[in-house]
Image 1 (cartoon, helix red, strand yellow):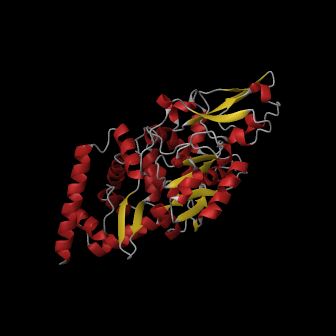
Image 2 (cartoon, one colour):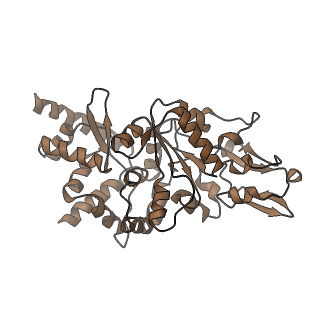
Image 3 (tube, rainbow, N blue to C red):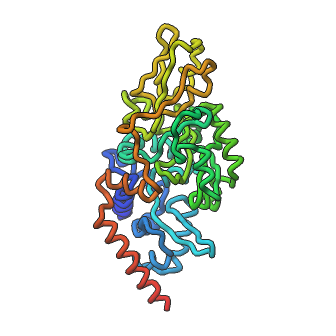
Length: 376
């Protein structure tokens, strides 16, 4: 039965780092039926987190190589799996988790029914997908002063300079909320991807190419618009999101918590010199977490709510607000790269232990050997 195929696919997605937990309502299966055909749903679980050619996936699935090659490319084009193209044109395919992944790849395919299903599912999904945050918060550029100790991977400009290829795309969250009838007046083209992620976005028509100079201009526009900078939770980030508290699913959910600080990866917090304050209250409006309140015309920072974005600092006319680095015991550990970041999340969810990784790698090598043998 087709429902069993979609349940198998849901289980496969739940075994990936970001998770895809079941619900009593079955909304997650409704989402999968909306996105995957039956044939695509049946093929997807044969992909792993190791990029592989269509011949290897065909060997594993027992299907015809030409059929699998065509189907995988169509699934990659539709944003259901991830594709990596080598400099010589070899195409390899791997599983994509649902968030961050498949959902974001559908920014051009949103409709009211899909968005409604996602709004029902996100409260079930985020606790799993964010057991270890997939994004972190870094300060906007002008909030970083000369006396503030900042690591290179905590500066947006440095993250940009580490990559030779980049793309910018519309924000999935702002498009989602516009479809839901709650449009935002913030800039939309604010999602920057790098490297193989940029290649995927460009080949799928999800974004356009940008150079470092234009990205710096976009970052400046984001700061002026009051957007929070959230790159991947890795020192070598795959993307930078520029987020508003009214649309971003992460910030919207954080804002409902009594202590957002416990659920973000951020090395900084805001501090106030009350005697310098002019009482303009711009900082109160700029804060996405309601972390600043005024008492007797002076700012009070709620450190339980502050996520260290720096937006309050850059528009303070008197210099009463600044960022300070948290004490060493409160410093977040930022994984070196995206692979380590994904494994950290998976293990927090009880997935992809050492034995499972060994088996995955062994099966990939074995299937690669048999696929080559079949071709020869």
